[in-house]
Amino acid sequence: MYKQQLLERIGNRSATIGIIGLGYVGLPLAVAFAQAGFKVIGLDLDAKKVEMLRNGQSYVTDVPSAELATLVREGKPGGSLSATTHYADLRQADIISICVPTPLRKTKDPDMSYVISATESVAAISHAGMLIVLESTTYPGTTEEILVPRMRQAGLKPGEDVFIAFSPERIDPGNKHYGVKNTPKVVGGFTEACSEVTHAYYATVADQVVRVSTARAAEMVKLLENTFRAVNIGLVNEMALMCDKLAVDVWEVISAAATKPFGFMPFYPGPGLGGHCIPIDPLYLSWKLKTLNYTARFIELASEVNTSMPVHVVNKIAEALNDDSKAVRGARIAVLGAAYKRDVDDVRESPALDIIQLLNERGALVTYHDPHVPSLTLEHGKPLQSVELTAEWLRAADCVVIVTNHSVFDYRWVVENCHLLIDTRNATAAVLTDGRVIGARVVRL
Ligand SMILES: NC(=O)c1ccc[n+]([C@@H]2O[C@H](COP(=O)([O-])OP(=O)(O)OC[C@H]3O[C@@H](n4cnc5c(N)ncnc54)[C@H](O)[C@@H]3O)[C@@H](O)[C@H]2O)c1
Image 1 (cartoon, rainbow, N blue to C red):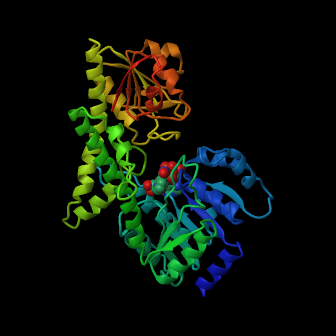
Image 2 (cartoon, protein in one colour):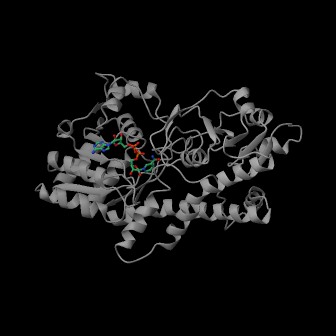
Image 3 (spheres, protein in one colour):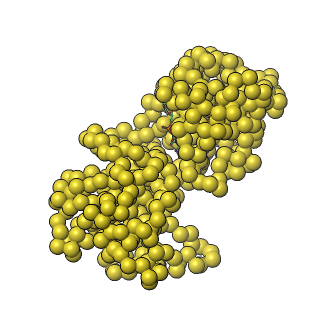
């Protein structure tokens, strides 16, 4: 009975949707459902975010404020978006998607406190006929071990009174080609009925929904995807270290290998992994396997190689300065780009933080510029402000380091205005192949 009711409400868009956690994942999802014609209530414990949303202001680059403002405008017919900090406001919700963080603790073990806290808050306001979907990336078994028992404790029978599923979020911040609509959505329910309603729910915003047999399988899908990336990046980073020893240009090698039309997919080396996903998610899987006395060897090895990359970059800087008869101590080092990847404002786990920290520890005088990151906080709470990008700043530096290859940077101008440039992203490739450029000595990874 409840299943039919939910399917009808999804079909005629009368279902009210609650999105919990309005960050990089939750906000675009809330907007997508509101645009599909639903009444969406976004919930976040961060009052500042809620206040901004109420004023139609976005804090996520992929969501333009203009789009948001139309949805939050009161009295608008069709889909709408409102924001709250109170779980009680979700009492009437038919569907809830949980998009809270799943970071690591200092010990590199999963920090499930956000998922547990959000689930307990949902359990307190849950009612028969609700669909609850976990979207946060997590270890296989979470939906069954954390969500299901709490709903049972609330007096609801999963699969009959209440529907519970996992659907991994695949969003790629900053990606101009793939968003909620054209990225297939994987879903796995606790029961068949749970999968059915979850499928209908996401089919309202995604062109393709892929059903797997269980929530556990859906959790594993996400970890396979991100482990695949982490391991391949680890492999290519190790290739870069080997090429360095062999005096071979790793970028040239990858570009030639990529001409093979089958059986090869190019991955590129860099200063290290960053973001809330690739450096973290595989460790959720290896942690779970440790509890089953199994060592996830590829994950551990890739993690070891990837986390060593900032040290490699700092060694490259030291070597290059040495060639100029300079020491790291006292050297003025200008870091270009602090975000973990191109064209985003996210510095979580960014290798720039490690590189700056390591250089500081060796006595360098580090400044940075990132148009998307106005300030940074280093490990010991030391704040750093982004400086203005000027030719004077570049010229005054003993060494400039490209850590993030943002597309707004004019790399020709950068090469022309510095003495020594360490390029960790091959951002200057096009400039360097043009023999007319006169400027920095460029050292690539
Ligand atoms: N950022 C990505 O590119 C990405 C991509 C795919 C999957 N994911 C996964 O999605 C999840 C969310 O990631 P994100 O990048 O959106 O994180 P985020 O930090 O940008 O957003 C999470 C939000 O949840 C809020 N929050 C925390 N605890 C809460 C609670 N108990 N109740 C309500 N709100 C709460 C926080 O205030 C924050 O605004 C993580 O599991 C992440 O691994 C992220």
